[in-house]
Length: 373
Image (cartoon, rainbow, N blue to C red; front, side, top):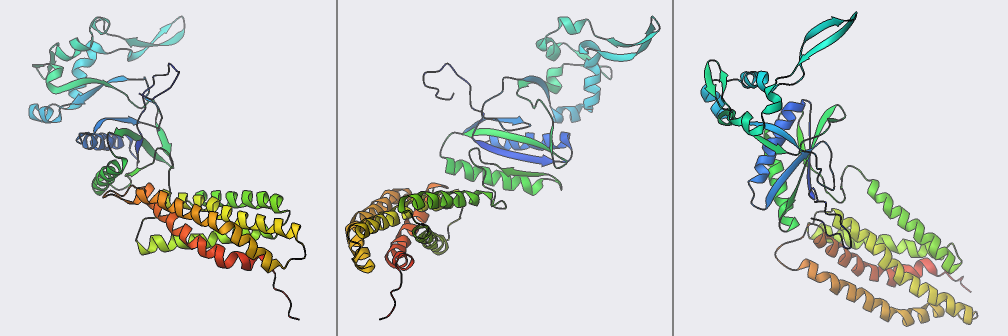
């Protein structure tokens, strides 16, 4: 159940772990989805796996009865599934098309429904004997009738049928991701050509082939430019602030390269975080520099910048150090969380490099070279 404070909404979540499967034959694709579902349910921390045509945040109330054939028993008795359905169809069938008749010079379709279909229930279907090739059988001996959530529609993407599996893993998400990755590797090894199964994040799908998420960084930089332009009443100083951001990114790249980390959502989040932290430090210095220049217009720009640096470097340094110390706990422990560890590593490396950028490059971008006398 989802925690809905001060609400009577008691919908149950469909699951945060998601797998999408594609194939060119719907029936065969559904069989493979059932095999993957059975494989996932072998893990004790996975209690339920839903198969639908699309992902959903909530469980659907729609359910159907379906047959779960006992293939081993059918093979032992030499009974084909079509023979099994043919034996129960006359008793439980509804709207069976038998032909057409002419009524008042109009053609009408003739459909028949079994009288027992209105009287028998699911229990009767399973335990009332039916005759197959002259032998009496109970449906419960050859198959089971179960009730569960089923896809309500058929979806196709790029001429491929799509099925979506959702489940919840009771435990650490890092361990759940490892189990999912291992099971997907095993199922993909036996899938026929034209069939695929891959993971899809419930919160944010990170596609390494799609670089659209990096447009967010461009949007952040544009916002920073306009904000600092208004603050400084200048178009040059905002560029000096923005040019320090790529220098901090060098620290992120070096950290991921030296420690051989996988760049994923955590690394990208460190980019976004560094934009704000690095910009704050530059804004503090330049804002103090502008105020000093307004109070003392005759003071040398170099002396004014040095005075602003001395006034702001202590809180800036303490902010950077405290932020680094705050991210260190995410890097401790035997388990490296898939998101938090890269975020912490990238942020710490970027902050360390940003000190160098603020110390060396910010004055180069800000101060003009004085002409020689």
